[in-house]
Amino acid sequence: MKSWLIPDNQVPLTDSHRYQPISNISTQYQKKYFCKEEIPGLVNEFVKHSNKYLNNLIETKNNLTFILTIEIFLPSKQLISTESEVGRWIIRYRSNDFPLVTRHSIFVRSSERQTPDYRDECLNEWRNNWDRVKKLLDNASDIEVFEHLKQLDDDEWSGIVKNFSALGQTQNIKIGFMISCLIPESKQEDLFNALDNAAVPIALWTRYDTTNLDHSDRIRRIDDLLKSCPLRYLPKYIHEQQSRNYTTGKKI
Image (cartoon, rainbow, N blue to C red; front, top):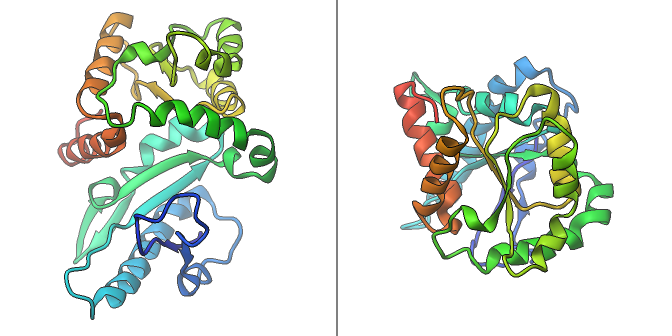
């Protein structure tokens, strides 16, 4: 577990001075491996130490606030099954328990993208693909800019994903994938490895087993989501919806 400070969010993402390591927090968590059952409690302690550090940092500076964002890196085979659990991890504030997602922004990412081999082989392609997204960030989007995967029952879908870079050369440029079918557990690792290998910047799917919905219903819900706000604010919008629904016990 590591902790980083971004003192000025206006500094470009590519600037090495954007991130400052907080060594006095990171060094408290030197153990390399933790059991899955240990992680929620570990995150709770990590949040306490981070809040204390950041509050001390801004105490003498008027009008400053901070946003504590938590990133969880998971292997592909656990992205779907564990991602939905992360928001429900309990943290404690002033003798009260809260689901983690109701207090902090959470991003669950693929751990494979952190390996040196992946960066060496895919970073340039990923940046080229992300350039497509940047052109649309300030617009409300729709499903037309996403390549549609309707089923994962055969091997046809993997060829479509592998060919993602070529979709940027067509007249109807695609910026990612929309998966309107249920993703069976047996296909999760293959799917996310394929998305990683193709350097796909955005993929959308329904999180829960919505067996009562057909393809058209799932497509309509994803389309409604995309039209709800500019693409730049979509992660924030989804987080707010998840936070509201975790509080009420509903699923999204």
